[in-house]
Image 1 (spheres, one colour):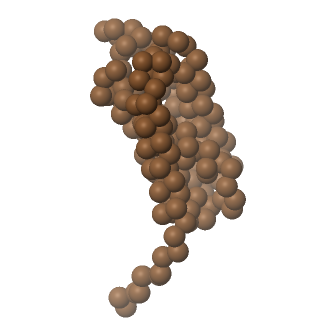
Image 2 (cartoon, helix red, strand yellow):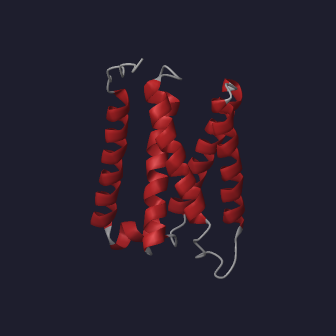
Length: 157
């Protein structure tokens, strides 16, 4: 497994955990939701953009998976735009869709025995376990950090 594929998988795994956290937690729109969401968006953009450089399934060219990555880039961007412009229902729909697409990609990456994750589980289960624990720890730190109450910054005026 190449370093790019490993970094892609780590970004995708973080996106899976943070996305689930933000979809399940209440209330929406508060500071933790925004902080977790911003880090989720960065991990999603990393995952999408890094996938464009992975050519394992179709050496030398693009595959249908790259098309899904471009579609996810568009839906993610629309979701961000909607949040910034206050279109909450649009934001909610596009972010849910982007997250569900990520879940589908995860299922595809883990259900096919020839793919890297199942091969890693068979050949190096300890490494896969350590990576899963590390990503879980990072997600936990992000969520804990987002929930910290911070004192308001005093105005200079």
